[in-house]
Image 1 (cartoon, rainbow, N blue to C red):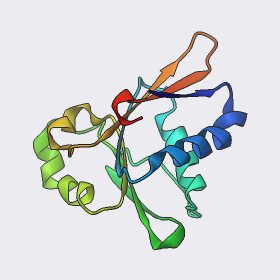
Image 2 (image 1 turned 90 degrees about the horizontal axis):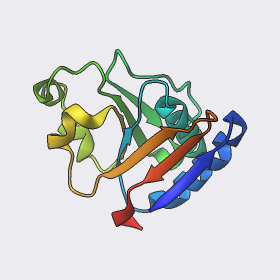
Image 3 (image 1 turned 30 degrees about the vertical axis):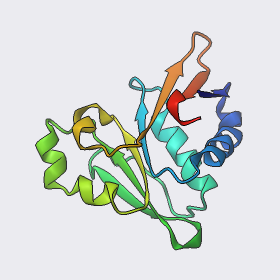
Length: 142
């Protein structure tokens, strides 16, 4: 298991850099955490670390945002909070994104778990009593 601590927003760049070093060949990352835990904020920092120059926004209403990263790579950023069922994910073509070979960062993945391919990396963001964050990356990968 890998754990990354984020004491304040000043630590985001360093935390994102640590996360990027752990990505390896893995492509699908499911981010778990309560409302306000910092999933979007952390994904934004990761995307910046991966060379995304464009404005990174929450895909809450679009369901998925696409970003160009360094080396001509694509990053797909999902927010599944508004999905009512897994059928809606099928309808917008989620599986095509997951099997594209590009990085996929998924917020609120609970509803689409049946669609997620083998090897998905589960990332849990916990808010600690002092308002710092602890990012836990699933143990079976390290």
